[in-house]
Length: 478
Image (cartoon, rainbow, N blue to C red; front, top):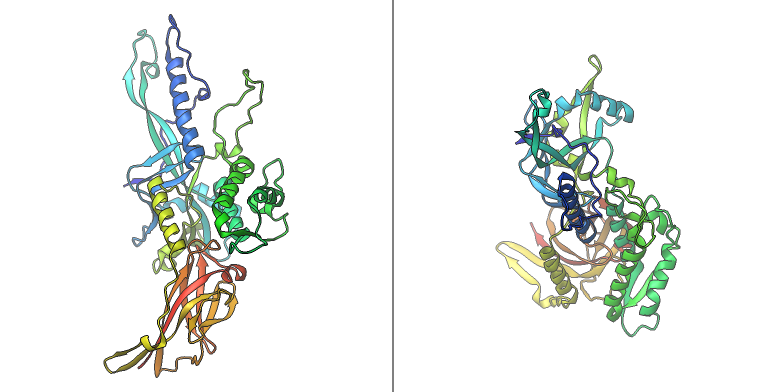
């Protein structure tokens, strides 16, 4: 296991232009510059392909966790691989650790805490970030005059692919990652599928025009995509089910041609006037200078020693549930093509599978030794009770608030100790929320409550109304 540390011998020279490669001709004398330029060209194309065709983020591993050894709390990053925002492959070969109490005593940590102000809730927000570094290594002797200095007698013969993992007070500028999430969320709320018999559905030829008129993106990149989309009045575009493939192709075309150019991370190379076509190539994005990958956001509990004016980890708060202080939902990641293929096949199968038939009332009664056990209610219910599916015992939604939905059914009674309900629930994946998380909350006087999340955020009422739930409620006597 290694520790978070900086590269000892980083390369400081300006890199060659990766948009050029060597024009080999008979009689040319090849030197260091030619070999360096050719490598830069080939490496630059690899980065270009990774950045634009694959994306950036965690590829495998790099899980962030706490080591809560008493007196020596540490942050640990597991081995793994990632692609940086500029398209550089990064390999972390062994687990890396950082002693938190030692780090809190450094000047950088003290300055960061003071800059943010004393945390009123006893927490400091930190960001675990990863970036690429290359280092000169493997010194070899150089031929030369006997009067040269010792420093000039050797030179590095290899360049090692290395990395730096940092504890930062600022998050990386994940503009493209944020734009991807916001664009997909916007599409989920924008498109409403209707039956093919509907006469109000939008024609495929008008879809792109409608989307572009709603986006209204300005020529210079806005701070985030949601700010640009907020200028459009909220509305829904109705699309026939048979037209959905064509509409999704159109939505992806608008992303590629209109939206992504404003948010993508440019390469870190130099751009100049193109002598061939006379066109000016845009300058590189400022994000390229901050080529960090976010691994996790840490809400670190700390205590302040007023006498020594030092900070240390509040281990009593950390130990019971250390994972609750780590938020990895903002981390960008890249799925392999094989994983994406299998996921698409699964989602297609789930979308086209017929709804399961509900059991008749005469079939749901069952018995357990010594106990009266039966199905009290069951059905497929949408958040606004509007899916038209039949349900057993009139299972329905009673009320919704942000992140919470209350279900009830005929002859529902709040458990009083003489009987109990068993609730089984499955949230159906939908365009509104790709992977909702459902947790039971309580049995209330009017019905039972469920908590619905998307990642770490509570789902709003509008989105809840579009979700469907497969429910089965059993009752047994104690």
